[in-house]
Image (tube, rainbow, N blue to C red; front, side, top):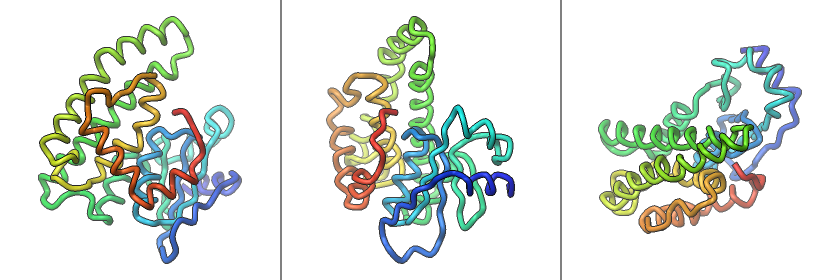
Length: 226
């Protein structure tokens, strides 16, 4: 772990000072994309936490630091100097401290399941987005946009309709933030309106984007495609 932390010290970083008064130190390390780091950024912003947003160059810096990371993957969130890996557990931890995991254990289970499904969808889209062969990329993209994306989006639309405009429980949860955080990368990669004919999801996204602290983050974050 120490070699990883020493490596991070050499990387240029930007401290997003959103709101005062936070005592816990957060440092997020991820690639210079929205990806699966963006839900963490959304949650930290929603909670009003300052955080260092370290963006690693995939081809240059990442090979040098990969072996020293907890599981050879990014994102990594350091909490008071201790590194933790994997998007979903990190989001769950942050959401728990923001009362965004529902009321009962079954609420939490369902919210976690929705977030995992959203992460699965994003990974499916990433397969064709990162494909270097143009012919294969086009073929996989068409199939994904035609079948995989509508399947998931229809499921999420149905959930939102049943839950008063939210993905679970009739109130804001981290699943709603997760959905909104990955939305831009999904739509940019698919080059279609993924909420077309899905008005409940469209309205949900608009509500999340209208949260004051999320607005602050959107104004500060780099403009990226994926």
